Image 1 (cartoon, rainbow, N blue to C red):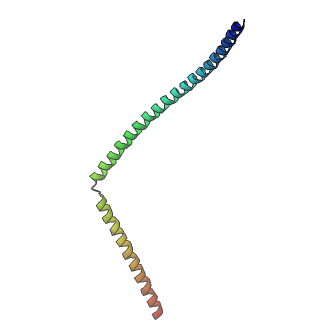
Image 2 (cartoon, rainbow, N blue to C red; image 1 turned 120 degrees about the vertical axis):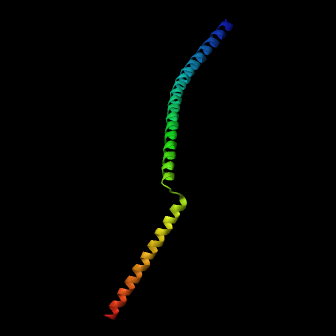
Image 3 (cartoon, rainbow, N blue to C red; image 1 turned 90 degrees about the vertical axis):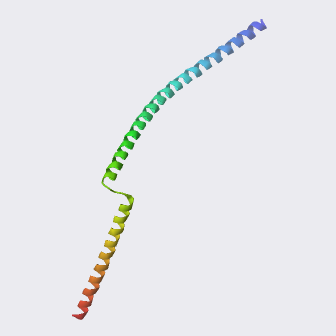
Length: 109
């Protein structure tokens, strides 16, 4: 009789463990399904990102060709920037000379 009771106890424990494992399996399956859904979403986003990147690269190349066609280069840009700075400096200098000469005229008058 002791062996039968012991076997029933082990059976009950095994049944409880089986139920716990079924619950864990169910939770794991739900988690797996959620992860698969997320994975598909990430794949879709990655595909969109790759397409957007290709489109942007094409647009950049198009802009670069337009820039090259108009004859622009970094050296020309630097020359124009230097010329603009020189013109501004000359304007400041002329403005100071003009202001100084007007001040002198006022003192004379």
